[in-house]
Amino acid sequence: MITLKGETIYLRALEPEDLGFVHSMENDQSIWEVSNTNTPYSRFLIRQYLENAQQDIYEAKQLRLAICQDEDFPAIGLIDLFEFDPRNNRAGIGIVIQKKENRGQNIGSEALELLIKYSFFNLNLHQLYANISVNNEASIALFTKFGFEKIGIKKDWILLNNHYQDEAIFQLINKNI
Image 1 (cartoon, rainbow, N blue to C red):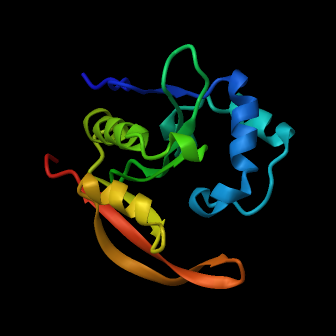
Image 2: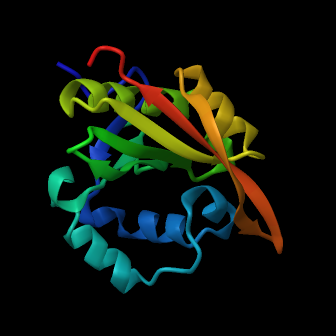
Image 3: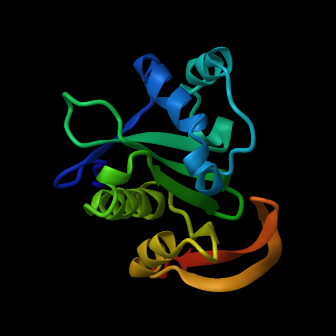
């Protein structure tokens, strides 16, 4: 059985107590590029989102989990499955660690590995994909470490600071299905 607990982190469902954390994540402009956020979110909207977070992945077509280091400490990041497509057994995957001091400590690697295993063994997905700015070297290194392959480039896909950037799409095929 696959667990969502690793050696140093665990992944858990979002709780009402995560309102402040999710609100700060969604409104942190320094990570909007990687989180695909374009506008600020109100506490009201985040509260509504958290109230509906009890829907399972088949209803919501999304699964958002908090990345935590210890059961006594709050979330430090989020990892998502999005555009869940059970008919074709695929989903997008994304991860963001909020504070720079928590990056580069293997937290993202451990979280990504846990969610890949969960996706392939519990959800029986055939493939995962990630959309990553071609300038985001850290994310490219993270995903390729787990076997994601670049399968294409979306030209001028992201508008950032009045300049268009390309976005790559990476794919991981579950060879066991």
